[in-house]
Image 1 (cartoon, rainbow, N blue to C red):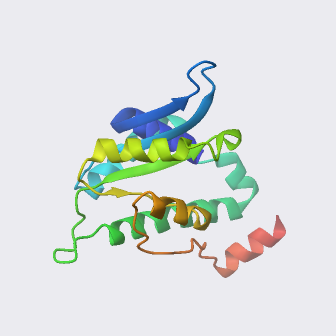
Image 2: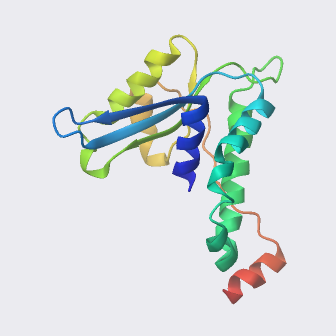
Length: 172
């Protein structure tokens, strides 16, 4: 679902860069890149508008397992909060213009072949001198640092669980 959300949003309001094998056309990797926008409200509105056709996030799975809903909410809130915090201008507390690499992914069998480097270079090409923001898993920090990114903050996405949530989770 999250991948579909990124693709829908980038399709309407950004760029989708796909890397394929030139002879077989096999999918190797993809980058969803959003242009700078200084209005978080506008971005939020565009995001909601672009993913509405997908329906509510994994609704059946959320009904079956409340833990999935809590994890989705924690991810959505946590990444949004930290994104805004990290990209805020220290003087004005307003977000500085930046490109957002929403998703960079390389097919498992294509990893280690330079596809990630090509996709990151594409983001840097589009951005020019404007900063590019991305989130990544701990295992990928060294790769992005090697590509010129600066690691600003490590954070954990932890669902906030209330007592009633625990009992419903334990019952499932």
